[in-house]
Amino acid sequence: MDQGRSDIEDAIARDREQIASTLEALEHKADLKARLQERAEDVKERMLGAAPPSARPPAERALRVVRERPAPFVAAGIFMLGVWVGRRRAEVG
Image 1 (cartoon, rainbow, N blue to C red):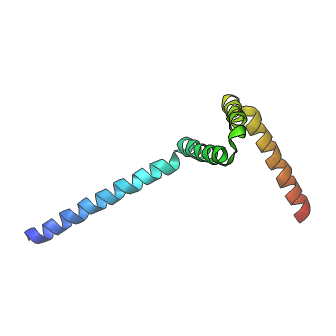
Image 2 (cartoon, one colour):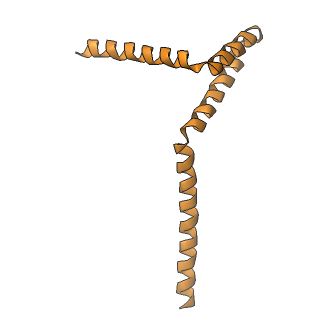
Image 3 (cartoon, rainbow, N blue to C red):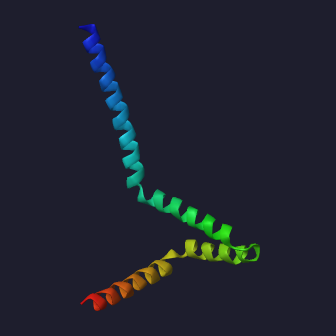
């Protein structure tokens, strides 16, 4: 009987570890702000890495401006998305 109980307790412990791991993954996935910040850092690093040394200071200034006042850039992005969707609908319809 002890062996059966031990097996069940081991299975429960494994299940708890799997649930904890799944919850951590879901928490990370649900943290949109952190994911967007990570993505922005990745894009920044790729952009600055691909730029020639003479272009890095202006690129860094541009990134700083976007960080300080993101609203106009978000608005421009939404506007461009609307233009694109409107054109797609006109092509299809």
